[in-house]
Image 1 (cartoon, rainbow, N blue to C red):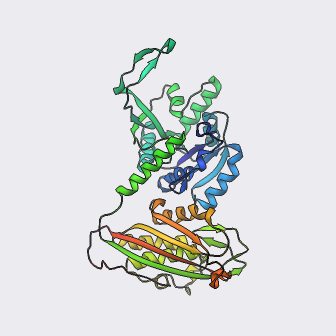
Image 2: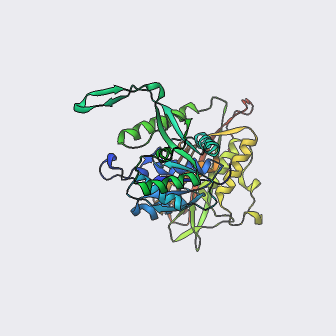
Image 3: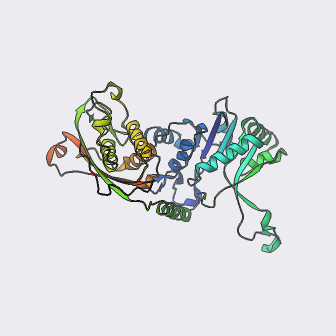
Amino acid sequence: MDNVFAVVVAAGRSERMGQGINKQFLPLSGLPVLARSLRIFEEAEPVQGYVVVAAEGDVERVDRLARREWGCRKLRGVVPGGGRRQDSVRNGLEALPPETEVVLVHDGARPLARVEDVLAVAREASRWGAATLAVPVKDTVKEAGSGGFVARTLPREVLWQAQTPQGFRFSLLVEAHRRAAAEKISATDDASLVEAMGHPVKLVPGSYRNIKITTPEDMVVAEALLEKGEKSNVPSAPLRMGFGYDVHRLVAGRPLILGGVEVPFERGLAGHSDADVLVHAVMDALLGAAGLGDIGRHFPDHDPRYAGISSLMLLEEVGKMLAERGYRVSNIDAVVVAQAPRLAAYIPSMEFNIARSLNIDAGRINVKATTTEGLGFTGTGEGIAAYAVAAVVSSRGRSENLLPTGALD
């Protein structure tokens, strides 16, 4: 599959959430709903890039959050939506690069879609021209007649509930939207516009977990599904623990990078790399858990290759080291010690960046921030420290070296 791009639609008014809440920014197990939806396409390798369609007043906010805090590397742009969903999709299509061959359209409010769903829809769209993720209807469906009475009962065995992503050959979907505009056709999904042209749409079996966040009750269900998924993924193999610690001095003329997030502050941390003290502590904890020494052994501060490098890139390398030796990350707990600045607003993005670098769910990462009430070098503002504890398990079921291992920088 070549030249696969996506349009993520997040321009709805969220009217059924109530109280003027924009569901796209609601936290879901520590990450905004939209951030989780974008992460799906970040992880789907065949997808080369995507465009987000946001409400007109949210375009700059989404662009800033996605690029600076959510770590969205494939984002090609954020464009304003239209009056209807299909108008928003059309705006997104116009922002895609001309080399696009297959386009996936996804609801930003479906954060529980799976990477394998994206791949399946892209594959079938490439083959058939149009495909939609869908699940068989489980309930008996009645068609309403006049006066509030049942007109007829529909045959459940042939009914499917459409989901997203939906996938299309780019030229086909562009033509479907052109015809819909000319003939004033209105539809609630893109597959319907293609169907109106007489073109068949392939059904791709999806998952009942792939719910759309529409009401407050949906948030409760989504949280429960994420929690259940986490519990089912908790490994039963032998557990190994590691401890990490790092400290850097605050200096003028440097950006303050913590957990891969550039935090607004008048000073930054001094160091050979980007001096991300939080990620350094996490790296040492992981290396310690696997018995692999510390970051100084693997990434020495005299090596010019690491001058100014993003610590998240080094964390990715640590993740690969663990995977090569048969270890999986169970969870990480970390704390940043700083008198200033205040970090609470940036913590979800830090957790997302760390999880993304290790290719695990953000629910496995917990970051905290605290002060020392003015005591010590962190209390006087001379520097920032970070502590981390990591748990890893052997995916090969090895039972040796079960005692916790530590690493201090």
